Structures are given as structure tokens and as C-alpha cells.
Image 1 (cartoon, rainbow, N blue to C red):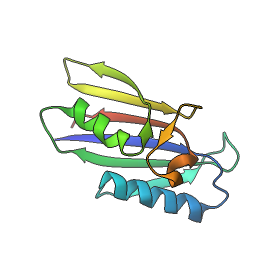
Image 2 (cartoon, rainbow, N blue to C red):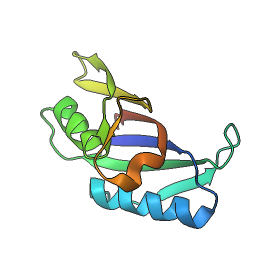
Image 3 (tube, rainbow, N blue to C red):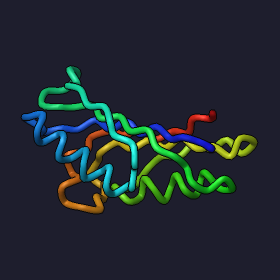
Image 4 (cartoon, one colour):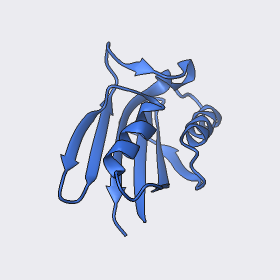
Length: 118
């Protein structure tokens, strides 16, 4: 079984409570059974770093499942695909063309999604 790691960097989150509420919405959206780690992100003012670790359920096409999971949050994502390992790394950078699936997700500034082999 493969695990994924999703790292999110927020913006305009003036309190830990708001960042936790955002993290819970993401956890529910991804149907992630595991919890998350959250910490202040010092590089930007009013920002938090949130890390999730979850399971990739399909053993056949991890790239497709990765894209489907991240698209539940926002788009577009930049993809790096390793065909031989059937792994994908996805990166999101907020821009004028960003599309968020829920209005509450617009506090997302940057994200990275990757597969971790066991």
C-alpha cells in the first residue's frame, strides 16, 4: 500500500483556530482517516503549514487517484510523473487562474502532494 503526503501553506489565517477549521475541511474533503500536523509558518505573516498523511487506495493507478484527490481542493496543479514507479508529485501555487472547489479553500497559498512508497 502506498501513502501520500500533502503539505499545505495557508495565508490570511490570523489564528490557529481558523487554520484548524480549514485543516478539518480539507481532511473531510479528502476522506483522510489520519489526523494532521499544523504549525505556524514563519516565512509568511498569518500563515500555517498543515501536513496530512493518507492512503492511496487503488494499487493500479496512483497518478489518477492523486490527481482526483487534489482536484477536490483546487486547480490547476503542476504534475511530475514517474512512469516506471507509477508515482506523481503535484504542486499548487495560488495565482489569478486558481480555481477553488469551495470558497473557504481560497486561503490556500501553496501545496505539494507526493507519494511515499512503503
